[in-house]
Image (cartoon, rainbow, N blue to C red; front, side, top):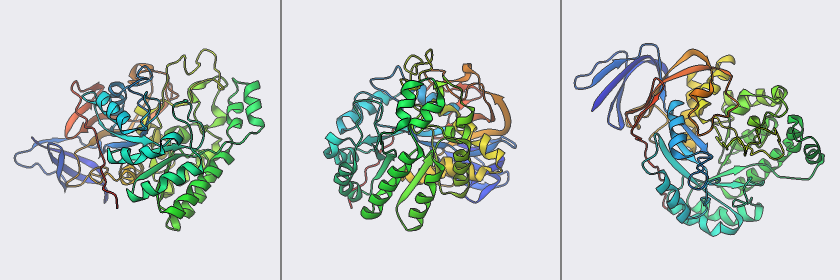
Length: 450
C-alpha cells in the first residue's frame, strides 16, 4: 500500500525542509517539496514533528544465542524500535558460540529469525586461532569483521596482535571488507594496582586504562591500513587526543572511519560516583576535556559515526550490589537512548538535525556499504522515525525495553521523544507501544572478491 507522510521538518540530503515522503511498501517513491497529497496514497501530516531516516546503529551486542539472559534479539530490537533505530548490526562476541565461523553465523541468524522488530546485520569476529575463518565469514555475508587489541572480557574471544592482523589483511583487502578494531594496547602500569586496591573507586578504573593505550593502538591500526589499503573502522573512540591522528590519516587517503558513543558524549569522569558500575565500559568514560574534544570531532565530521556499543549484562554480572569496578562486566546499556542522548548534547552545543542525521544515519550506512538506507530519498528503504526534538523527559526504569533496566541514562533528563518508527514502511513502534509482529529483516553483504 502506498502511503505519504508530510512534515514541515523532513531531514533530507539537501537539508531540513518541508516535504512529503511517499513510499510503496518497503521503498521510498518520492520526496516532494511542501504538502503534496497524492492520489492512491494514504496521506497524513505530522505537522512540525521531525521525519528523519531511521537510525543505523552499527555496534550492538545482542548476545543471543547462549547469553540471552544478558540480552536477546526480541528485547534488543524492541528497544531499538522505541529509540528510533531501524537497523542494528550485531557484534560477534558475548553470544555462545561467538561468531568466528560461518557455522556460528548460521546459528545466530537462526536464533534471530522471526524475532526482530528492526533490520539486523551481523559482524564476524577475528581471533588468533581462526584467522582462516575470515574468508568463509565474508562469503557468508557478514557486514564487517571485528578484532580486539585488548582482552575482550570473555575467554572465547581472545585478542589479536599485529601478526594476526597481517595474516588477515590480504583476505580483507581482496573482499574490500570492513575491519572494525577495538583499539587499546595493554601495558603494565601503576593504575592496575590502584584498581586492585580501590575497586569501588571510579578514578581507579579510569587510571587502569590510560589514554596512551588507545593512542598506541590507533597508531598501529592506521599504519597497517596505510600499508595495506584495507578499510578500517575504529570503534568507540573515548580519547580526544587520538582524533588528530585519525583525521590526519583520512586526509592522506587512508581508508579509515571512526565512531564514538553516546555515553562518551553524555557523561564525564568527574560526575561518576564511586560504585556506579552502570558506567563501567572500556575504554572508560574519560574527563570532561575528552568529552568536549569528541563533540568537536562529531561536529567537524572527524568522527563520522555515533554508535551505542550497547553491551548489557544482568545486575549480578555488573556487580551492582558490590559496586566493584574491577569485577563488573564492562558495558553500557544504552541502545534505546542513543538518539535522545546524542540529540541532548548536540542541541546544547548548537548542532542541528542535519548533523545529527549524518552521524546517526548516513554515516553508518556509508561505513557499512548499505547504499539503500541512511537518507530520505527515492529508492531508499522506507525506514523512518517521526520524533519531537523539543520534548524533554526524565528516563524512568519502566520505559526501558532492554532485557535489564540498569542503565546510566535512567534518571537523566533527555531531549527528544520518539513517536513512531517505520521499518520497511510498516509501523514498528508508535506512542509507547512496540508492534506485535516483528517486521525486521536479516541483512547480508555478499561481496565478490576483487
